[in-house]
Length: 294
Image (cartoon, rainbow, N blue to C red; front, side):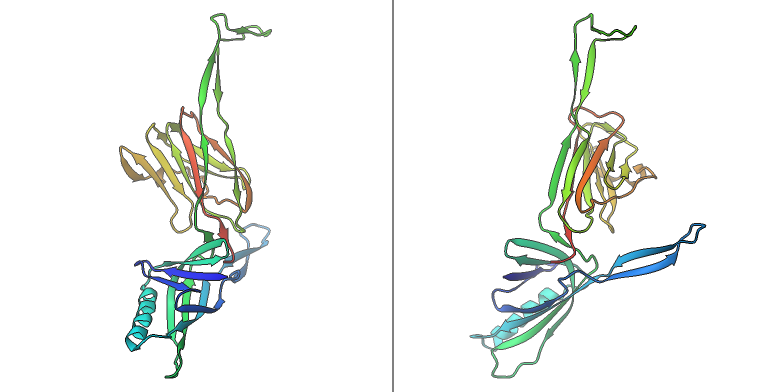
């Protein structure tokens, strides 16, 4: 059973599949259209390059409005509620699709609402709802989180230390550090942007996706009690630094060779590094799985 709901930016809600709006047919929940553009590459060899672009998604929902046991005032009220939810100007809302236990949503902007003509003796009225989704991917509704905590400790020995056969080698203490890699699984079927937060103390931290060989590096000292937050979502890519109790723009701390990478679908091995990891510093990863279909 499929249930669809829409919540506008103003908080108005529509529910299809239960209540008075019965779901008839949906177009646009399958994989969106892909266009391919061919162009001559910049290299000397003049090789042809192909670029793929996923088009914005158009969704059209056909529904039946149940008018049974309603007088004219009640009918007008039902139509008004639908119209108000769909009248959002240029603001995006959330379109949520529930199929059995699977729930996904997508940012959607209403673009049309049509009440088809009905005969005077009919107790149903057909309604057509249209949406456009500039970002064409469906997402799971809850973020997935992964954490990696740095730790370091010193193992100290007696005053004589440990002697080795090599002349001049003697240790009285050994520094140990925690792991530097984490495995993150993206069960979606397209790459997913990620939000990363580093808590201090760390010096010039970097995050490398070893699976895609892409790196983000921040050229800055992050003190204890501070954090830097990186968002790789296209259209809102940003770096924020919490310092002295205030969030600041940290884009100017980004190393010029950095890439705002995404998690590829499947397994990703992510490496964390910096010049000097501090005791208790931590990296938090948060992302939503992205899908081509609802």
